[in-house]
Image 1 (cartoon, one colour):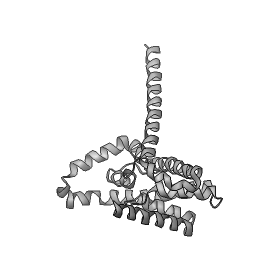
Image 2 (image 1 turned 90 degrees about the vertical axis):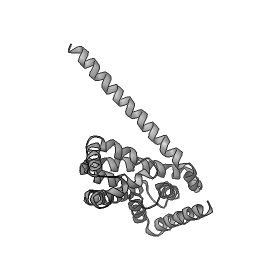
Image 3 (image 1 turned 45 degrees about the horizontal axis):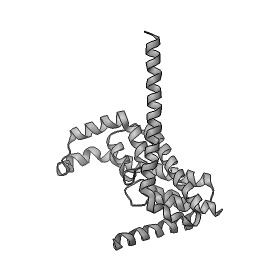
Image 4 (image 1 turned 60 degrees about the vertical axis):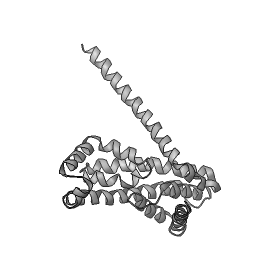
Length: 213
């Protein structure tokens, strides 16, 4: 446990140092790493940026902009890795992971049908957000839709964390203790909103169908 705490402490110091020395470029750089497979949590990066906004050292627009651009670049790099290396990986190493070309076909089918929702929701789930872009590339998800839903999901999540850091001020670090609860809380709210719109749409179709009978 002590080793884990020490590692997390070093990661936190790295994030603070990068933002303090590089400013908005530091935020973008860290979000590139976070959107790939590196253990850089946005739960540390964005609240600290929010704290700096409260201190008058940064602005809301540029923090959000740099974080979204960073998330997009990192996600696109991961997407490219999955897109280019997916089939080669399966042929060479698939047998060691009980994977074959049938799994690739299923992944492609999944992302062609539910890729948008998968990418969007994945941005709010710890650990998943680090890896979700690789299977999206692996599954040949439409690139324009991938960029759109990655930007929307990252924008909402990053803005939320930044705002919490802004409100907490000097206590911004305390958010890391509740990050998992925050992720699931936001996800549940989004699911409820999604269900509401789906039900509303189904009711509208039902009324339209009855009207034309």
